[in-house]
Length: 287
Length: 287
Image (cartoon, rainbow over all chains, first blue to last red; front, side, top):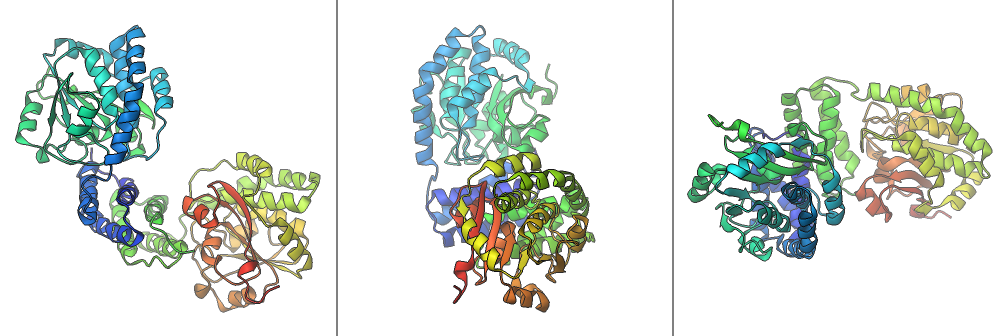
């Protein structure tokens, strides 16, 4: 998905929020914003929004000498989500269609997205997403592809959301490779965050070799690109994975909440929609 | 009030909204945003936010060759407000304290602010503002100063809001000079908008000689500056007048809704607060 001009105000907001997480004083925030304005000037609208996000957060981390402004927030999100884990498991166990409920819960966990908003109501979101109709619902296709798949390549999104992913992975009962970021970016899950969420016993955790939001394939490691090319079935979580992979030919399903108006418009759904989108239609020569 | 870094995303949003009102295509919008990024780069944080707003809208109007992107919106707002006029008058007539109710209604009308949001619920806002406690309430001082004043210099804000101002002016029963903008800026009222709202029979309409939001005194006409210096009592409506006059020594009262977080913080009140603030405390040597 390309970048729209409506993303520009949002880029500045995100830069400012990240700067403040590093405890930058106002003068430092001002200098960082000036740098981001320069980057915006040169930015090509044909690039995806996460490419600009990548640059913004590189600037903030480098200029402020802070390796991971979101580290503390990620620890807190994971801890909060873990306290909900027994309830999530019970919801799946009691469900008529446990896979469908686990899919919904995984999408509910996608509310933990500090690139969009610093505040979220996790328990309210779970209630909402369990009851809400899907705006795009490729569940039948997803279940069928999953039944046939030898394994799943699962592209993670945020720390904390990882716990919700774990519930889906435990429910799918397939070998899963869980792909996290190669370095800190926003509140996206890294290997450490996935481990803290209890993913190690249920999936092979690998990183994509890149510290951009979403999956900017050309910046990812050779190893990850090989996994992507060979994957039987890919689950891509969250907005940034949709933004960066929406036009990629691959056996991919996007699971997300459409939290921003630009992405909602690209998907053709209202803001706050829940989406399970079949991206396999992009696949060249696929059945 | 100075500019804060939180205003930057909002400046870009406002530029984009104004550009779209001129029917600029995406390439033109892109070029306009590039120009605004340049301006932002050079902008001094010691300036007030309306000074940047002034530049943004100058760029949009000049580059797009459109004299007044908000003209149609202003006509619609005024027409909508005029249909409410009989009800506003009835509310004042039935009130225990008609002046206080008219003040509230004038503040309710301040929701018609297309610089903040393109959509507003006017009738819902009237109900809310009639019931809502003031976050800052200098009504006692205001009433006393008004009783002693020979006349009122009334600094208008937006078209449509003008109808609510008219109700307050009719209730105050003092000679009023109603100050509008010297040229189109956002949906701020110009002479034509004030006339369309029925202000001519109840106030002397003058313009401030400037097409900036709020009241940037150094850009205003000599005549207006004279009126300001000589005024017995000044009513300043809306956020932009607060932003540009909050540190001015004058017998001034600010009537507004705090719609933006930065202005709310400057006033020390929550967003959505209604405010009647006594600015006479800035007055050097005033009683």
